[in-house]
Length: 314
Image: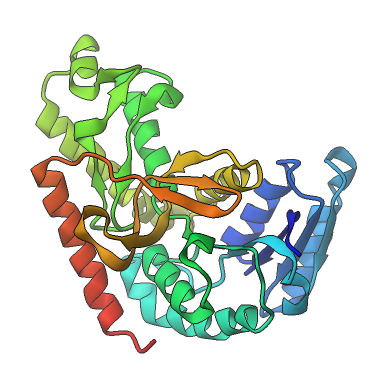
């Protein structure tokens, strides 16, 4: 039986440990198990996290094995090689596919009924790999997708327009990576189209601004990696947001990565698209409006991912 108050985190590197730290502060969970190829690392992280429990909602945090994940409501997978400077997310694919080939079968043979939340990069491809290797129904395999990219977009737009980013409604879709695209045609602030709102704030060179801001968002991970070696705080908050939507059955619309089943004419491919998320995982991929240019870019992004997947031995 699934326990939605239990979460498992597989991979205790920067992203895994920071995600665990973010999750223990939600009050959503009463139990957390940490798993890592380096068992001592998992034990150390569990000890460190547990030492703050006097100031948090009561929670049992411990290092464990795959046998401990059987009843977990959410299984967060962050395990994988880190992205290095000058390395794209897609450059990571073969290394991390091999790691997933050791992790996902362990989950599959324990007949887990929880939701797989894939965070490792390249997340869209690894979501597809997890889906195929696990045999889980597609609604129970979700990637963190472009949830972080979308938050970055709202942040840079908020700075540009000097407005609270929470009042900005805009999405980045496609690949969580270099071929991602901003859906400018649907972007708005307080119900006002983004171009009109920009003009209200004294910005009129829309094409130049859109290109510059999209590039800033797309390249932000590279900028952070160049400076500090890895990104982990932002994605940890994204993991927290997705987990909250699942456990609280929010029916929230988030641009997670999930299986396309005819949306935008795409099939048998995991992409990051606004999706209704609740306690059963994916409820509905939202077939949002795209203009012709945006649709062309999405199709190009899908083809690039498909080519990589076709080269993998799954």
